[in-house]
Amino acid sequence: MYEFIKPILFKFDAERAHHITLAGLQLAYQLGLTSFLPKMPSAPREFFGLSFPNRIGLAAGMDKNADYVDALASLGFGFIEVGTVTPRPQIGNPRPRVFRLVQEEAILQWLGFNNKGVDHMAAQLEKCRYRGVLGINIGKNSNTPNDQAMNDYLYCFRRLWKYASYIAVNVSSPNTLGLRDLQAKEVLFHLLFALKDEQKNIHISHQKYVPLLVKISPDLSAEAIADVADVVMKLNIDGVIATNTTINHEGEKGGVSGKPLQYLNTAVIRQLHSKLRDNIPIIAVGGIMDKSSAQEKFAAGASLLQVYTGLIYRGPNLIRELL
Ligand SMILES: Cc1cc2nc3c(=O)[nH]c(=O)nc-3n(C[C@H](O)[C@H](O)[C@H](O)COP(=O)(O)O)c2cc1C
Image 1 (tube, rainbow, N blue to C red):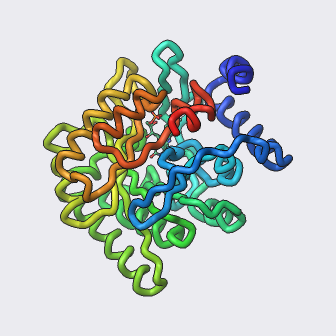
Image 2: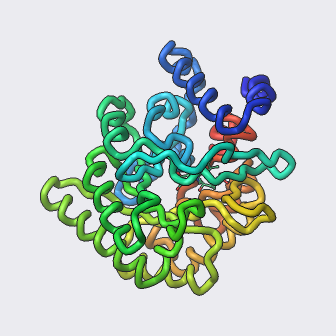
């Protein structure tokens, strides 16, 4: 069906097409139509103490506000990551800010964390029926200086942990000025140390262990990747999500996702895995467009996969193909 809808969607501005698609999916879900979708083969696995019905997840950014979780879950994902959410709502950069690079099977965007803030997300998740694995990807507001970034992450964590199967700490989006500087060894250590401490407090006071993952950029040097791995191992961070979009492209600004990211992403995973081994799971996200790119990520050491741009070019059938 997606093959019929795609040419129509591709006539619209990419961000508009995104909203039309999600509204359409939501409507189909509310009308009960998605219950006719064939069930996914079950392929359960355990990571960070969570049971995943399968290893193919939805990447952050598709549902930034947790407005569509139930509808998206009906497509058969093994897990869903919502966000990036920031403490206060923000509108992001002026439009147009999302573009399809059709020849390259890529997306270029500089959204800049447009989202409705933690209170809206909490209200949405309160109503949500989905009981599968739900990751919540958290960030900082663009007007919060980096030396106060920790407060934003702690605020999001405290406000949202009770809805989350895991929390993903996003320090890698290229469209919030200075965000990626939070990946520097000392800075990252302090940030994750504080969040680990909060994880412990919540575990003690509420008997819920909320795994903490960090999402990194594909544009880190080999040395910087080794530094991230060091911090992750020292602090017992539960997992790493690799990677966000790349700024390594010909355009003047923004992050690129999809096929051009594939090999760069796999190289990061391979390098991370050489340090983390199988002790700390890696979620691979970047340029997974078909079966062979997915196999490449597992061969490089990934435990779980997430998709975003592949869904735009291939539709939800991609999930079944990967499974
Ligand atoms: C339109 C768009 C919005 C995104 N928004 C976010 C976001 O809010 N937070 C985040 O961590 N990653 C975000 N991403 C990055 C994706 O989660 C993913 O890491 C990246 O696109 C690479 O995967 P892909 O090649 O399968 O798209 C976004 C990507 C796209 C294309």
